[in-house]
Length: 292
Image (cartoon, rainbow, N blue to C red; front, top):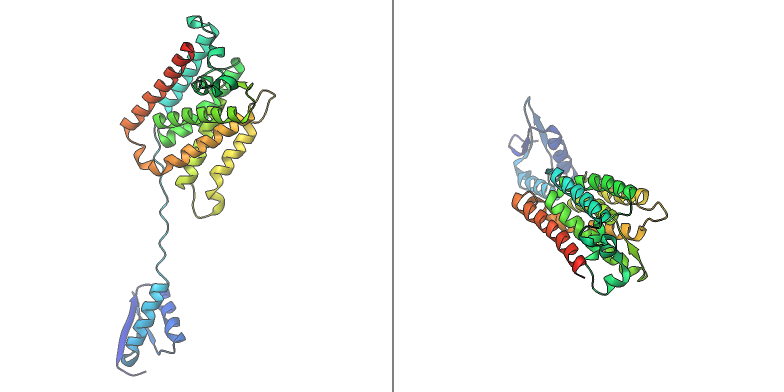
């Protein structure tokens, strides 16, 4: 090699020099690796420098440096107020219904009734979420509703989470009613409970909040949600499997729609307004039930 040499690449990464040396060798460009204690360099005869630089530029364009994907971070919010509100609403309605307050049969006024819902009494899709057949029914929905509602509230904030849960639960009741015979009747918060589960699954999956480098992790929230649905929502002779499934699907759709708005869900005013709207929906629904 001549004495007139040109540096065509220099780096503190010796592997980078070795990789580019192979590139030059493949094009039969003579080179030397000059290595010292802190860095190394590729040098070529001056007559080959333009050609060497061109090939190294092409190599860099075809092999850009690896940039690890930035994983979304989860901003957890205070979910306790939403859970407490859920427990209070469900328990208060249960107590009022048991005592026939206002001289009303709360079960008859608020339950899902296929004929009446189809005739326009859509408020029943909401009021039915607050009614329960007995203490065991109430306790089960309080337990699972508080659990799934807590996790949903942590992800989306208590106001937005419970507004979405109520809307998704009502939508699940409506869809289930349309798919079944007109004689279908039902009560219970379980549709909302599984709407909360679907909400979590859809929000986490769409937002890629779990590990994103393996497909198994990417579909994990959906598979886990369906597994819990099958395990907790399909047993018992009086279980309304269709309502559970529709609630889950509607909740998952809500989570997927809200996931791109994740950065905005931390706004306190948004959460407050959503909480107020949730209370208004339930109150208005019961008001319409008693006026019908």
